[in-house]
Length: 377
Length: 74
Image (cartoon, rainbow over all chains, first blue to last red; front, side, top):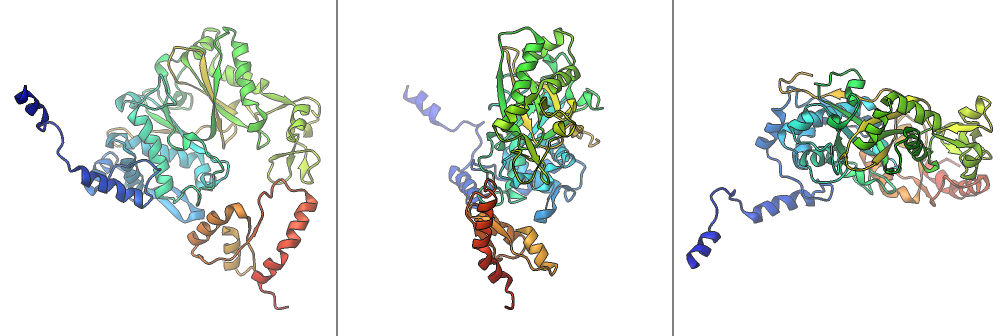
């Protein structure tokens, strides 16, 4: 027995040999410099960085996002350093780069939104074969933890915001509360259990392409509806959630509806396409003028177009009232395109989510193709 | 903060005002713009929910500080 115990205690040949003190020293080095979101980061060396840069044909000095008001830019190289810090594997890097391209195309990230008190977060939706190639989760616990690619790709964006753009909380990041999505928010669409084409195919890409669609989000709201097989009832539940008055900082709002597969199939079996659902929600996401007046949001401010009480000195009529619909229901969406629909989660319950987005309302989403192994886009 | 600094650099006298909740980010922004000692006026938080009379009272209260930073000749 003594001999056996001695064998157990001997170092195993397949374990990496490393000095734990040195590892901790490296981790503390990063923490002491605030090069972190609060969690430990992965130390990055030039040779490890080179593995990331080898995943793209893009010049390391190419700028992926500028924040002119801060006179700061993120280059491919800086994006790679932060992806490595975040714990990404090198093969995730093309997805990270596509995320930056999408954020640049979406527009809000370059215009100080990440310094706002609103406290928005980037949200990444990934489509196509890259999901499986790098082990992304599109099914159970899709907004939760447990999957390295999801966790670290989203974190790579946050660490870049902190380390490259200097957006640290209590300093240049002035978020009043923020959202848990600021730590990481990256999900894959559950294309395999969706009754519809994937989101990137709705916007001109081939289903065999991989793509990232970045959005700026405020919150992620849970919809529990296990009781119905009537598509109108479920769609009204979604519309009711989207039209909550607390979301109405601006005249209208916008949303990404992430249906669990069970809910998606309910609509699919009833013959609804994604556009039908968006149109139905657009028509039914309304508040009465009295409901808006009760919370002091029945008019809009002349300059900012934010909702204010009708007796506010800067108040002007909102669009519905300007069009002569003073006493009618007021739409909280400006077009059916203000509601995007995707499918994610496990096919095990009637659960969906409304992601409240901040930015383009009805414009096309910023769907960006992921560079493939050959370095082409 | 950035607007005030950019106006000053363009030769337009300006004073930045922020509520006391934003002093740290205001200083950080001034540092980003290469003006770490930039002087600005603070007012109590909150501001957005004040009515006209409260705003006028607040403006009157900070006027001396603004004039001091502007530095008028008389």
